[in-house]
Length: 156
Image (cartoon, rainbow, N blue to C red; front, side, top):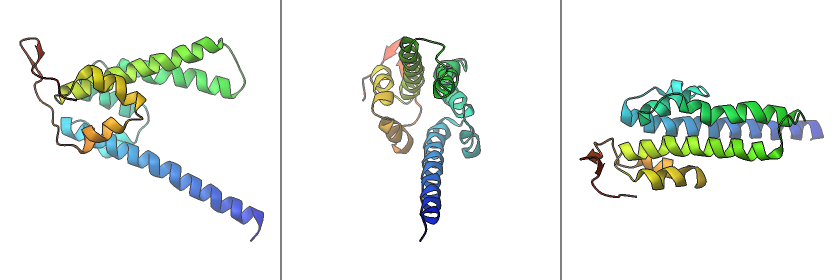
């Protein structure tokens, strides 16, 4: 075998892995959206639109998508091109804004499913979205969590 052939096989394996992870992530998000009656699997395959659909699941404004997507869309390509228009502090600030937006979305989704908003919101981005698997494949369904202005119980 030549080096070119081995390299080609390695690239194909890498592409199948990347697309496999992407399709799996879209499937998991679709499972969450299906519980709320939001979106189809094909809609969850569209980048950025999937975040908008998650905002619909969480019953929050779609403008939160800007907090999740914009920092990466602006800073990442510029940094990859070697164009440093902002000090490194803003890279960390952008990551923090993305974290807060993601935590807000998943906290509200979990709250609508009867879970503790704060715990699920804070730990979902940190635990690499393993809690999303629990929401997607678990038995939790959307419920009316609030009665008399407060949670009935804390369920993590």
